[in-house]
Length: 344
Image (cartoon, rainbow, N blue to C red; front, top):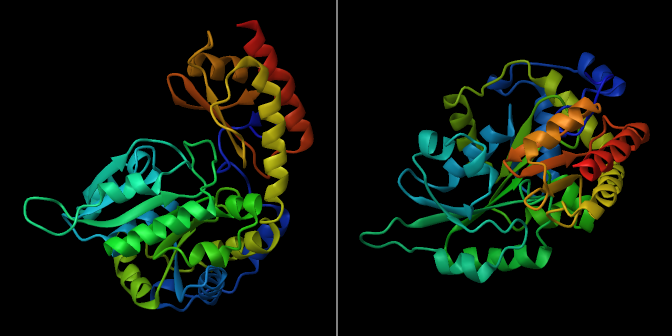
């Protein structure tokens, strides 16, 4: 498929580079459930240090990493606050309720444009007849918010809201690397604002598998038990961790190239009135409410032209750039998409 199509569906479709495959093939391994895989241990220590936390835990997926973190922060029957489009309540198949017994309440979907005062007004304290709020979760960058970057000032205000209310703050940082590159905020500064983070290696960084939970040493010790309970205990996982370590060493700074490619796509489709948000990172959100094509029709027409795009809703589509796309691939998409939109 990679040879036939320009795949803009997601940054999860990348394949390991030659250097990454070499790192995987030569990785030193052990049994990670016993804590004896040296490559996993090195990855966990490296990521914890990047974010200024004591420890980290390698997990098979971003969804599992998020759900482990939420269970660390919210007891069964208590409440999580997040936005209505958050990945943790949109794409994780009800896991917070099913596995953690967590009650969720949401503020209206605004992507990265969060109003801390609105969040503060939603927090419920301990007391009779109400579910107490225990944690707030935000997403950096915001997937359904078109890759929007939550400003550092907003995150600091949210940290203050959480501290004033005595609740925890979690970051779904699946694409926090993109925010770091786009805004120049050091990863350690992001890390200092959150009680827990989940960070993904298999999206923009191009590793085949893996995310990490980041937090204090005592939280990560508990996280190991939760991971095992959820079926996430892996054995010689150093083969996968080696891909993550390679990605951290070689694929962070190059995210700026993906951002530039996304900007090219946005510029190409902008004259047709379909851009839903300002493009900051590698996601281009298409709002088709005022276009004659709906999302499925656009995707079908694009596929016929050799371009694959994501359908997120009846009138919502998405383009995603990643390390699997060179300039020639973007040229093909920039030629095809405007032609389709103009003809409809």
